[in-house]
Amino acid sequence: MKEILRITIGLTISCLIAAFVMGSVFTVTNKAKRHNEHMDLQNTMLGLLGYSKSHPAPPDLKLHPVYRYIIEDGEARYLGYMVPVRKNGKEVYELLVVDLEGKLRERSGLNISPEQAIELSERETALQEVLKPPKRFHYADSFIVATLGKQRLAYLLPGEFPGFKTFIRVMLALSPSFEITGLEILEQEEDPGLGGEIVQDYFKNQFVGKSFKKLKALKVVKKPLPEEYRRYLEREKYKDETFTKDQIEQIQQKYRDADIYALTGATISSKAVTNGVKNVVKKFAYREKMLERIMTQERVLAAF
Amino acid sequence: MATTKTNSQLVINGLLNENPIFRLALSMCPAVGISTTVRNGLMLGIAVLFVQVCSSCTIAAIKNYIHPRIRIPTYTLTIATWVTVIDLLLSAYFPVAYKAMGIFIKLIVAFAIITMRLEVFACKNPVGKSFWDGLGMGLGFLFGMVTLGFIRELLGMGTLLGHDVLGFKPLLFFALPLAGFFCVGFMMAVFNYVEIVFNRMKKKRG
Image 1: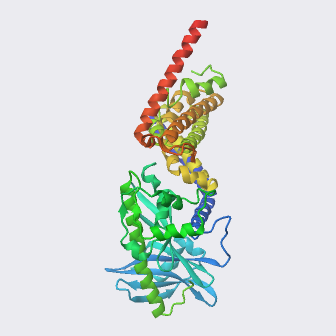
Image 2 (image 1 turned 90 degrees about the vertical axis):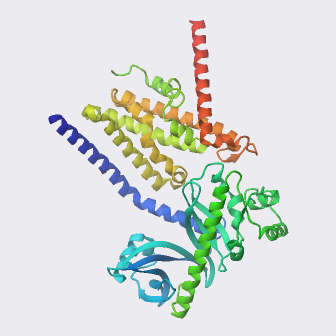
Image 3 (image 1 turned 120 degrees about the vertical axis):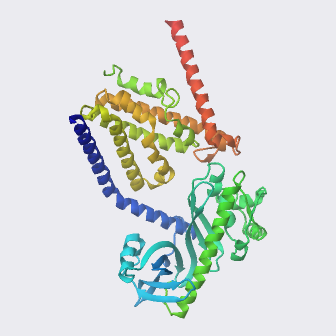
């Protein structure tokens, strides 16, 4: 009996010490970690819009996130869009509750600033003030509208879909007419050397320039990637042998309506990305159009 | 039973005589699964080195207070604590490195080599010796991972540290997990051969 007590006390004390060490390290590092994640995402987004360190973003470039929530009220389900709106020269968030047919049900202002809205927990507190129980809500996804001055520059939409092994997380950049202008793979665990090649320029850049119409019928073909196309897709790698402007335009024309060339030995990963991107864009386009229509009908002065 | 080896002998021991991957054949999972590139091998090696040294020192320092019946849970707890610490620190202050190796770090908790070193060495020796032993073992693991990564990246993808050196991919097979077994087996053979030659030379002289 004495033995058991000693073992129990010994283990409890070691666990407490370990918990204390881990807890204190967590408190010290958590802020820096959050900041890093945010900066990382910001850099990815700017990179997709074509800005980098050597070509910094202009000061009037603004990113306006729109958050989508699913709201449950008993049996009924609604969609809640948190939209940044302009009010007395300031940017505030408004919640638009839309039913599944696309009709506006409710419209209410939210007590949250754009900086606070980045945090999931802050959004939850703000939403709780408006959506009282028994209404329940949970976060679905978000998209970001980039504006340059008063002009709408692009949509940035994060997406997630199953790959060959686990989920692949991507970030897409779309022009206002839903043409793909950039694709970035954020997280993937495909086989290195095979499906892992989806992160390479020669695969992901194949999506760039595909129009919405073409995208809806986009297929994967099992043909070798033409050499000139490959060099064009990887042109950032070969800085010394840059193409002339005419050549770039010519190749762009030629492959504009080409399907996606599958990766060698990784047809499933190639198909997963193609179908995933297709679904993400199709769903987004449908939602965007609906939201746009509601906002014009209800005269919501969106910040973008 | 404390060790009689000097500090440098302990480090050499970990690197060559008792190299974790090639002589002790421990922690084969990461050796086979993760050593696809030099970069991966290097990063995991450094992380293991850190965890091994810290855990060895901790256990050596508190060895008199551990109840012998619960020593294995205590080892695991110590390793898990250090792994969490390095995981949090890296994600906060070295986001670029963390992005590349984040998923591997959490795996270190289950590495056989660290627990084995704590059981065999750190719980019987003073802190100083345990530090050098941990350093030797960590370096041995790092050396093994980088060597495997070098062979597999060069032959599998034709690159080194992400730079294209060959310009073509000689054998994609080497980038796949099963090729890890071939490389480990090959390296074990090399280590054994060197040992045989070394002993023969010693005999001739002596």
